[in-house]
Image (cartoon, rainbow over all chains, first blue to last red; front, side, top):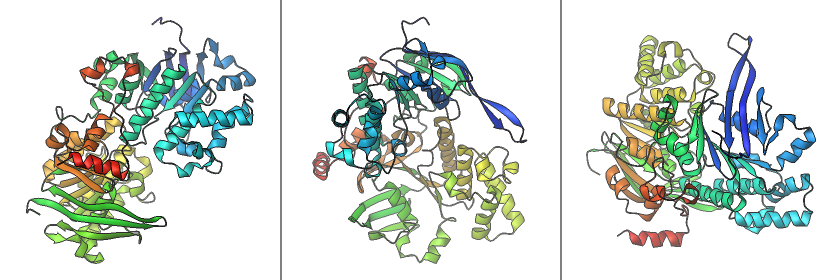
Amino acid sequence: MSRSDPLISVTDLRKVFAVRGEDRKRSEFVAVDTISFDVERGETFGLIGESGSGKTTTGRMVLGLEKPTSGSVTFDGNDLAGLSDLDMRRYREHIQMVFQDSGSAFNPRRSVGSQITYPLKLFRTASPAEARKKALDLLDRVGMLPSHFDRYIHEFSGGQRQRLGIARALITDPDFVVLDEPTAALDVSVQAQILNLLKDLQRERKLTMLLITHNLALVEHMCEHAGVLDHGKLVESGPVDQLLTNPATAITRKLVDAVLEPELTAAAG
Amino acid sequence: MSADNALDVKNLSVDFHTDGGVVHAVKNANISVAEGGILGLVGESGSGKSVTSLAVLRLLGSSRARITSGEILFRGENLLDKTDKEMRAIRGPHIGMVSQNALSALDPSFTIGAQLVEVIRLHQGVDKATARAKALEALELVALPEAKRRMGAYPHELSGGQRQRVVIAIALSCRPELLLADEPTTALDATVQKQILDLLVDINRELGTSILLVTHDFGVVAHVCTDVTVMRRGDVLESGTVDQVLNHPKHPYTQGLMRSVPRLHPDDASRSVARADRRLFEFHGDTTKEQAEKENEYVA
């Protein structure tokens, strides 16, 4: 387990939500239950689980969007829990997120260009002219046109929206990106384009990524290491080649069996 | 065409009149569901697969949609010649429908038992007690756990998979000869998806219900279908048995679709490449018309 020098290190992370149960009494719901994993530099770590397994909550805690009940997340050796608000803002420059539905993550009433450049304005890292130039370069890199800068999000298709979401995530030159089901809403031909783009960008920018998904084929394609969450517990983690070919737990086996491959061999026909 | 087809869609064309002009959503499409078969109607967004299935039920609704040509033959009769009243007697008892979003297909303010009973009484004219017994039977058919207690539950009290089972139960309560299922498992977890698909296969085998399954996923097709039709931008590109189309796809678009999907078990060729260098086959699903015509030349 003592792999070299991880960029992200999650230790005994736990999140408990207060809920009202059926009897209207206060009770606790353990969304994430004492999980630990490392994400190596330049690698994609896959976080697998069904809905309600706690994978998105984990992603939000790693990004500092949600405060852990206990446990720690360290980025490059620094514990996020100990950061002041100011330091947390600085940290956010290095971490970004791409959502399943980038369309709803953009403000419909502002041009996409102004939203892509907004982080630069916020962090005061570039003049407006530099910011525009950088955004145009990024638009080009993700396969969009300069003329798209002044358009609005509703004018784009699902695949284009996802490309814009990626451009916005990369504008601050982050070291780490959380991808939450980045292709779940896309057609397969568009999914292939987006996944190839993410791999190219990862190599060019030495990005470290956390891929949250329930699609094991995506994990097989993108990740070297992965972990399986079940009801908030990390039941299994390790190299993907081993995890998916030799699952040690029933839940992983169930997830592997549920993948429908477009081959007729296993099908009942 | 032949007597042993549950459904024959012949030369169907559907246009949408939009502010931006006329969109040909379906162009001269020929689609057949064999009696007792499961046809997978495959395509990406905008291919016309859902419009085709809605046209079969004459549910295109909007005044902007026009069926400009073709025939939809069901039990030897052209559904396009039917009056609205005749169609209402066909939808439900003879052709059932399951949509992608089970939550929006169910009424939030009525219990699922009440919704089932309504459908059964409307179409079968039986008394309340008989309808309730049939409703329970329908829920047991789709293996809804604790069916009796769930009769009194509201849609929001059920999980996504359970809701989809209820929608299937409603569709099957009148024992239709044909079931149209439009992406019935797309919104579900992988493990639940498999359960629902297995349920559809069981129903097909036990009740002999023919199924038209609209999907974008060749994995789903391989798992449940007997035949496949591939559509793109309103055109039917290729049809055949699952074995023909999946093992020997003729059209470059079909080949491209299958190659662009990430696999859980990649072949040896891609395994030999480091994961960081593995790339998915990239092609443009919605290519230009010229490109499409060029592709069409490959198929002779």
